[in-house]
Image (cartoon, rainbow, N blue to C red; front, side, top):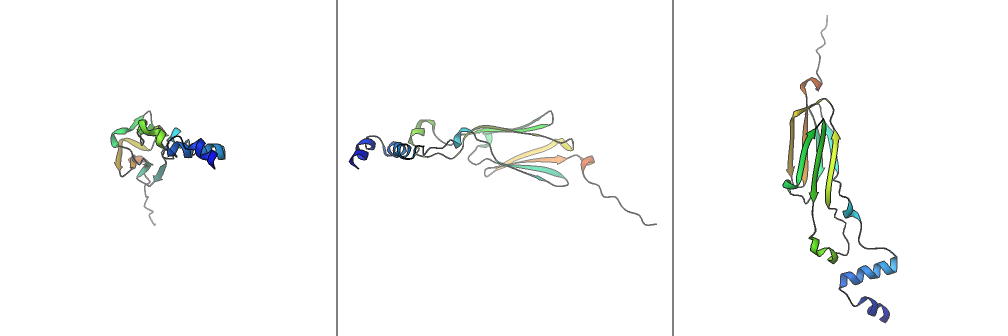
Amino acid sequence: MRNLMVKYGRGNLASDIENFYRDFFGGSLRSNYDCCFSPSVDIMESKDDVVLTFELPGMDKKDIKVWIEDSVLTVSGERKIRDEKKTDDYIRTEISEGSFSRSFTLPRTIDSGKISADYDNGLLTVKLVKAEEAKPKEIEVKVK
């Protein structure tokens, strides 16, 4: 026990715990989740539109960009959670951060002039309205 105290009692507690874990278990308490942030997305289709909902907690609206080019919808941004100066103080980091870009090829049935995006409470909702000619039409059946 005295050897452990001498070996690990010299730095700060976070470093001591990280070093002990690495030596004992052969791994790290730190994860590599923060290397690649890619937000989850739900896609829902109705007869009138297609709605994409992106999970972007902790992001500011100004850090999110949505655009369409050549029938491709792209959502991109950057999420920063931690102060870069204090990264050594973390024992474990699982909250993903970084830049991301998600692209979706739009079907021809979408009216690109009627696309809207709203951001509220960590969710980005992109509404893609279907063109009138693409919407299902009910045909009246006549009885003779």
